[in-house]
Length: 123
Image (cartoon, rainbow, N blue to C red; front, top):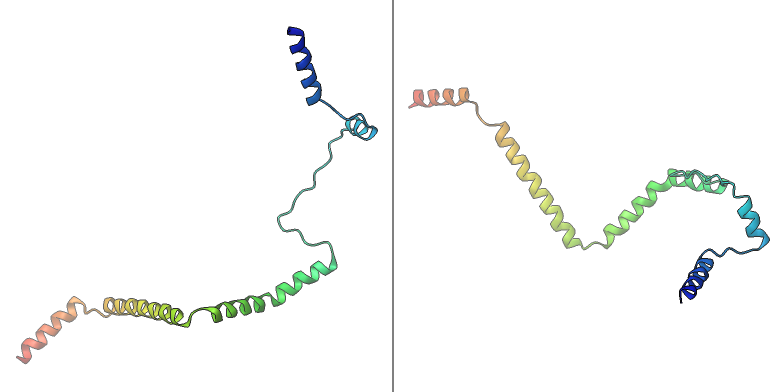
């Protein structure tokens, strides 16, 4: 019984460690020199002249393409929602401006004292 277990273990071991005995695989195994890996660049330039032309075209005319896409997107938006968001933005800006002018145009203590003196002299 112990011998059958050994035979089964040997059979499994030979299956897991099986290597093809063809000439190509043995030659590759014999000459297992490390293959130098190519360094990957983050944004490599294309190797063809046509690719460089595409990049130049994008640099020159990419802004107009983006503008056209933005205009198409705006055309598809609901005009009522667009108006509502614009009004909310304007209301927020108005509140901010009013708050700013209230703070900046506040009378100083000296001005308040002078006003009181003028009122008292008039009365």
